[in-house]
Length: 212
Image (tube, rainbow, N blue to C red):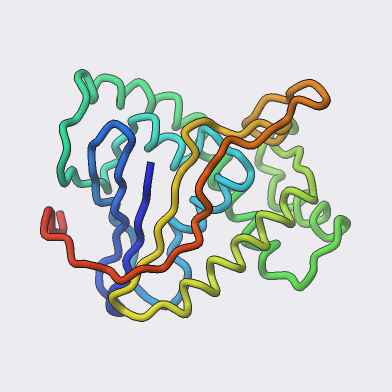
């Protein structure tokens, strides 16, 4: 699944273009455009880096269609509405976890060279609303996710209106014993091959759909 975030003029209604692997294309509407990193990119980066399979973006890739999404093109798969209802039922019980973890990593990203102790101390506060199993995080993983968030925030801040950032969501969730993933036996951990989201290209106005 490819997701593209155009840099729109400040204060316009922001959106992302979601091109799912099944061929359906949607616009996912968010807040107002501006130089700050969009909330949806923040979620994307954190969920990807922490290999969260049951968050917002894993849900969209699986077939969830949120109210903020508008179908633009491509045939929707048969029984998409029924599948969406089933997935949403499961998402509602797990979505809080993804939201809390994203906010936690965002806080860590605001620190300069956070230590393991700082991350663990912050986790004790920010993740206290989660069950113990979901609040168990690896400081090194969190630090890496926070650094990735800083990189994307800097890249977004440098964009001019008319440019965009594109990201690829992994087809298969990554598993390395992190929240939301299963732990493989020693020596079997691996990363699925994913194209790195390191491109900035001119934005071409898409006329396939307008604001809802």
